[in-house]
Length: 357
Image 1 (cartoon, one colour):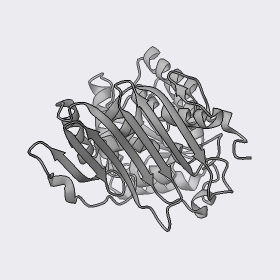
Image 2 (cartoon, helix red, strand yellow; image 1 turned 120 degrees about the vertical axis):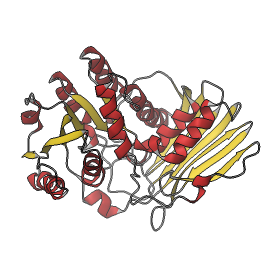
Image 3 (spheres, helix red, strand yellow; image 1 turned 135 degrees about the horizontal axis):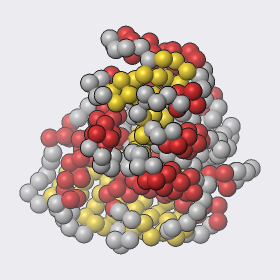
Image 4 (cartoon, one colour; image 1 turned 90 degrees about the horizontal axis):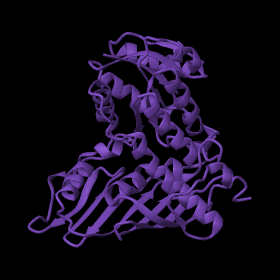
């Protein structure tokens, strides 16, 4: 049994981390919940207790929790801009770390997290739970079997709506210091899947705009063309401006011998599946999940448990988690400088301050 502390008790923690911990209750004991707003932590403690599990202790300062020697790991679901420091503090106190995306907001911070996890021999995992979606796993099998032949191009489209009340209920959202815009907050899951499909990157040309959200610092629209090292091209399109509500998150993959389109609310439904002798797939009629977060946190937690117990890398390691954020940072840098960005590079969201002023 892994003894766990949950740091950050907002929307994603309440909706998904809590569910994953309850459904994996034979693997984890949630012993502490932390949030500077005590009521939020109490709320999650109540949910755990109502599920028939032992009530976790409630804290408002995560440093108090990190001192506890009976805690094996922490899950971090705070505002994005705090992920880095809490992760570093946790690893310095000997805790394994499972952190929500984005793992940090600069290339240097991500590299530091990865290096420290190796130095301390601790597991560092990142919540890109959509990799566990059944249609994505089916796509993965086809890629690994070589059924696409040569990969040609792919596209991720995130066409969602985020209105004024979404930003008002959490003022950190849309700030360069603690978040970034649509690409960093809403689109990193889809960008992760595009990168996971096509591999390492050579260069990126990007453009961001703030069309319709004058009350936030960062972008509400972003687009990019990615040149992959294997010669394939990737296209990114992300927006929070779709009227009147969320439309879709769709990944399209085109190879010389195969075409796959996975859509639905959150890349959860196969829309097109064409290979030699295959014109359809049983996952074409899957229902949409209850939220855009999907159902992947449950297998994500199970995998992280197994990574600790069997001393192997998590399915989505720190190195994996870095790649999608790196793409977003490259799009920001390219938009700011007006030219393509070659990999590797260094950049931080803080370098975008005043961009739309």
